[in-house]
Length: 503
Image (cartoon, rainbow, N blue to C red; front, side, top):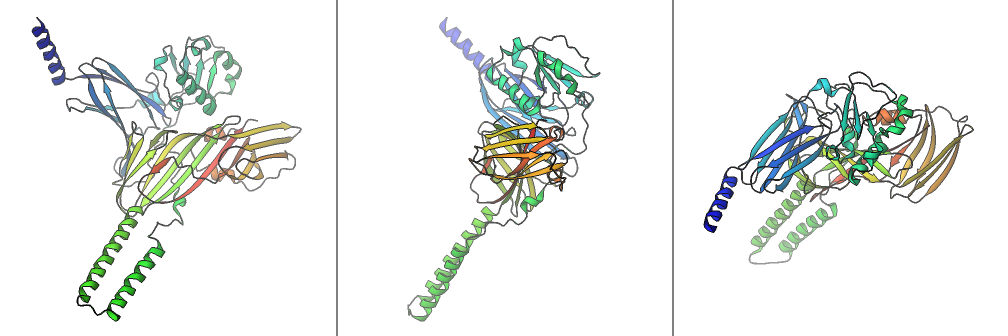
């Protein structure tokens, strides 16, 4: 009897190995609803119908023109699923380019599973406003606009764990009784969404502030959504490649010629010509080595960051635009910092043959293929602890402002913008505290510096433009959250700090 059971179990194992199968369910957006020009979550649910299997999930995200070149980002996940088990995957995606479907490819290590899917988009619904109700739906004292999509979630598992996944939601209403049962990570996601988007409310709050909300359909853009209106190549200006050290070259040339001179002038050796030939060959190898170092390090990087900080909060949202150029074809490998929410390769200009950006989400590593004499772009969203304590008070047409910089950054060119007027505050060093008292009557309309500086950015413009008082300045430190390995490169950065102050 034991032999029969063992043989039967062995046959089942062989059958499962030979006929491995999975069930895949995908959903773009929260409960299948997402919005154009906004970040969106992708949920992938994989059910393993056979024995334990090692899977590789590739998600291809594309932006650009179909016939003039495009930019591609490949997100890769590797994991194992035990027999007859289910694995759920939540992937945060940047604003989608509706001209390209999202491609999903799932393969097994044993090569007996090859699942492919292309997600098409329904633009008729993707432009409509969205209201998300979390928990039990309660009666509201106002009428919702027509054609508004209403999502009601009563299961915590249907909520995303990343705060940016709520980017496409116009208004989020939360039942307090349901809120107390939600796990900590999902609570934190909703808290961050409230900090940066100011659109999360309990039912008890929303009836008092609903008149401040405006629901409008999204607009479909011809060019794909990016952080900037257009690429900023000025951050590459005046940069130089890291050529071999001039002192080293001078020393090598001096040693080479002085050695030849002494051999020919003073040493009467039998094998003089052979020694000279050996020295010449050795010098050629040194020159080739130095040339190879230059080829390896011939890279310049431009970094442009928008640091968005809300008052009374010590966490900042950073939108980073990176420009990379090299005169040689190469492969760049880099580590991605833990504070990066998501990274992708945007499309700014038609270029054929642009290399793909590959992001390994398990190892938090990236790989970018750079073509010869072509400019590559990288954009990513990250969070940063930024302890800048801000207290202000508006009283009798005066603004009393106090700033304490407990961060490790130097802030220069601080300005206080009040509608169309500006007041120069100066700089704020690390560990420094300053106080100002600004009279609104004495403010004069100066040359508008803030508008042209901020107008380059697409992100956060809807929130910042609605604020009458904005504190802004420049951060004199590099905020680069990717570490390019094995390459010495030149870098130039331009960091804009923006703090909208409530009126």
